Structures are given as structure tokens and as C-alpha cells.
Image (tube, rainbow, N blue to C red; front, side):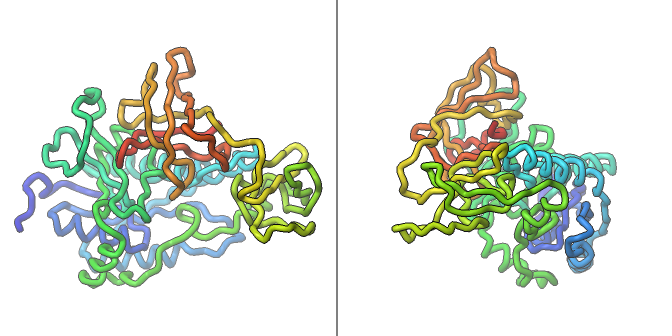
Length: 381
């Protein structure tokens, strides 16, 4: 199969993290005829955490050498510290539960990295995200049930990855049309098992490397231990839904709705089921817990979003539409109505659930979908 004349000579900077997904992405692009360069992004790391970037960079360099592409290292410590770490600390300090991976994508991978690539003459950047894009200018786009009419300035569309267990479109809701026009997701149409098989077939040096876990770039981090270095955390009372003290916690700032660990319950219960966090009062430093099937007030029937980004052009002002929404990574898609009243703030929206939802946490991302298409999203107020 010959290489497409549309891509031969097109320059792509691939973000090589040291993992298998970005490695296969680089190899596939090289095979397709792109002029590929591998780029490792070095970010800020706390001095009290294990230093992992040197090992990851070494793996990325080995991949670049194996694929036969140039290799660069970019230092985005300042950008990452300001836009991801400081943001995360501020949000936790305000009693909200942030999503640092979303901010990392917005400001580092598709912000600073993309700007660098453009200045260096690259046509595209590519990452190993499990997501897909298409363009209305591409008649061969293999997606079903696409709306026939779209806003003229919204020709690029974002879709969930084929592998539903690995789909990362939830973390990409801040992407704009300009960013999508310059972005490639080479493994988005593959299952993880297929990516792993390709890595072995291509002889990539990290083919057997385990998937990374935890925070974007920083890996597995004990959030409570991390935040203790930056926020004043005090032990407090765990309450049941009747307001009785039944245990202790390590600081209300640390907990998110739905969490079922990290606190101790001393009062015995007739039920053997675990307790879940159903509320917290940062000012009083209390956390309220309940069993999953306990009857309680507090289910959310509607909420407000701030910082809304409309990828699709269909979530704009004076819009009311039915859609599916997701409020956490790998969370259930639930039916809702999206409202953007003309008189509201331009970056605000209201979401009304078909059925009241529990586990809603301020600061988390709510992302809207229509079928497999990611329409956009916002931050829960």
C-alpha cells in the first residue's frame, strides 16, 4: 500500500512520553510517510517525590532511535507548575476537586507544546491519546450519524476512542477548532490490545512497559501527602447523615463526593457495605458519609458550569439540547438537557439531569456527548 501524497513531507512533532501509546503513534506516522520528530516534555516535579522523568526520557529516546526519528526535549516546568500544579492546589484549597489532567492538556500538551511545534514549522502535533478526530472536509470519515449541517467555523470534530475502556476524550473537552486542526491521534481507532500487539510486531523497546497511572506526567502521587506540603490540613469529624460523629478524617479538603476510603469509621453499623462520602463542609472541617443505598437528601437535579468550551458549535448561546454527559473519567453517561441562555455569562451553562445524580463534585469536568462525539464541556461550579 503506497503512502498518501497528502501526508508525505508533512511535519509532525509527536509527544513521546516514554509509554507504548505514544511510541506506536510515532511509528505509525513514520510508516504513513510523515516527517516525524519525537519530543519529550519535561515538567515540574516536587523535590519530595521520586524523580521519574529521567527514566521516562530514556525510554522515549530509545523509541525515537528505534523508529529512526530526531529527538528533542522541551522544558515546560514553569508552564506546568503555574497552570497545573498551582491550579490544583488552589482548587483543593477552595474545597473543590480539580481535574489536573484537563489543565495539562489545555495548557501544556495542546498549549505550550503546540505553539512550540508551530514556531518550528511543524504542520501537526500528535499524542497517544485514545480519541479520534474528523473533518467535514473529509468525505471518507468513517463515523455514522453525523449531523448534516454544522456551523461554518466548526469543521473539526472530536470523537471517543474506539477502545471504550481507554477512551480519553473526557480529558480533551477544552480543545478548540484551531488545536484540533493541528492535532493527530494515531491510535484512537485501535483497541489497546492492538496497540500492544503493534508495539511487539514493530519491536519497540518499550512494548511490554506497563501503562502509566495517576497524575498527568507526574505519575502515581499520594494526593493527601502531596497537598500536606502546600495546604493546612487538620483532622476532623466524620458524620453520618443525621449529623452524628462516627469517625475521623485527615482534612475535609482532601475528599471528593463518592470517595470510600481515606477516613475511619469507629461506630459499628448493621450494614456490611462500605461508607461513601456524600458531603463535606470545608469551613467546619467535617465530612459526611453514608451507605450506597441509604435514603438521603442531596441528589443533584441540575448544576451550573463555568469555563464552557464548545467544540462542536452546537452548545452555543440560546441553545437548549438533549445530550449525554459524563462527570468523571470512565463515569457513566447520563441523559441531560444542556441550556445556554442568551442572557447568561458567555462561558456559563446549565445542565438539567433527566434523573437526579449523586456524587457531583464542584471543580470536576462535565463533558457533553452526542453518540460518540464529544461536543464540549465545562467545570462544575
